[in-house]
Amino acid sequence: PCVFLEGKVFLWNVPEVTPGAGKDAFKGWTEEHLELFNVVIPTPEILLLGTGKRILQPPPFVRKYLNERGIQLDVLDTRMHCATYNLLAEEGRRVSCMHC
Image (cartoon, rainbow, N blue to C red; front, side, top):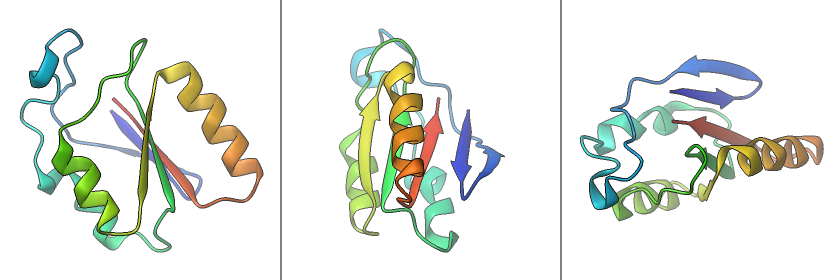
């Protein structure tokens, strides 16, 4: 998995997302995996999460954690994730994306 922030790519040490696992798709994820967004300056206004061929919703704590920091989370399949990132970046928005 990786994160794109401010035009840079970072490897992201998170447990692998498991398609078809239902509520356990994000098993092992904790708030510690999101702490990167406590230190990033400027904070992204939108964070896109690409989850492969199908949209897999993360546990509620992920959205809550990001929203508390003023970051909107949008979950998309990878194809839409890439297209949306390019569009928002071209518009000059503070957008970051994660792909898992």
